[in-house]
Image (cartoon, rainbow, N blue to C red):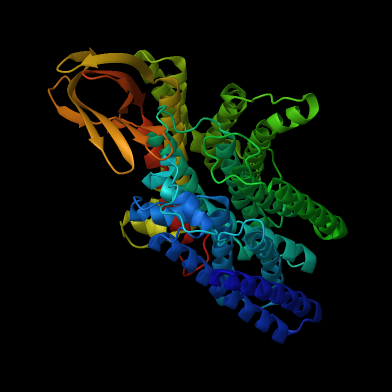
Length: 639
């Protein structure tokens, strides 16, 4: 037995002891049992951390007697990818999942209140930890040793040798593990009939949402820079699986504000917390089980039935709890007018949930079709685009509209006053872009963008004037944001979404593609840019062969950029990987794919992708806004 396995078994036993302690402490209202269980939770985190450090050491030292290390590493692998190989396969990913969750639980024992509510929530989280530790200690054990010591390992999949994908699983699984927290508190709240759970989960949910957003963004960046097709989102099943909990957790963060302020949407919030957790487990299952073919699926295993059984068990338990406690979930009627901010929150939730359910259906439909008719019917991008794009447009419009309507009741005069400037800006933008020769879609998208941005800026201007008046002329614009950081954190996130909306519209609808053949010294002009093949290089490395095309890009002003698209052939796997060349500017990316070459000729695919930079900058706005929303506050703020 490997020494690391001992710590996995100790962590499993400690988790079981902790679970029993939380259950008994809550049932008996015994503070001592809860205190001991909290201590066991911290010890569990130490044991899982030690086991994880062991695995990391095996990768760094090149211990190829460990089967998992031999499968996913080799001597030629750079240091950063020896570290990222930790989570390249199913075994390491499940250990990473359990490790992150154990750290979250240890954090909660330190910072949260030592009462029955947090005790029961920790007990529920511990049950999830037990599930993953059972996997790691049995069918997905990363510490199994071979009967011999290989001279070298098989190496990492070439597609995983990328900085973005190196950190993508860590950020994604941090988001996944963190979203266990609102689920656990929701179940604890309903069992104890304690509505305080809603106030405990906001910051944990925001923190987890940041990492889930980053995980999705890193995955999109990897698809854009590594897969060599010029896009960042293809409605791939694994892409979809990470978007599902993002949509429902976003809906949850909006709807809990209604319960906080008005004691409404109680059952809905329970269902959103549960649905988010189920989608988290579904995403883990889909990525690692291999039941659906995907360019994003790595480390496939035969654990699919186990995950399905676990999801079904959670569904049955939650349905039983809700049925038994249904009488405690009656909400106050918070919708006094169909044109009120409360109604926009409800509509926001419906759009997000409908979007998630549509994506879920499209993702599992191939499995259902295979079970029913014997073969898989693929659901492609046209299906998702037909439904999700109108929903996304409606959601963006709603983000602007929600600021122009008031709480509780609709007042026509106030509404006209709030909406007139955003409406004028939107219509003016639409007409201006259309008159400049853009199509109706680009014009409408610009109009929508200007409408929602102007609505947000108008609200900021009003708050700034009020703040300046109250503070005797203090004109520091940042203090308005910090004073109402929860509101403006959300608004900045909205701004990020608006930028992504505009960037996706440009990248998906207005990109152009050209097939080009160049010989050494020749050049070709496309869309005002001249492309000249300066050199073709070949390099031999211990693990791969690399063919590189050196291409100069010259614009109308004579400015020069140099791109080096290449083809890499990895010797162990006999696998070719394309590495693209990208020349970025605020308005567009020039994206060059080396499709083939001979001694003095290269065959290129050149793409012009407008506004793609807005997608990446939009993600930055979303992260910044969430961080602002997480900043501690000195006094109660009005949302």
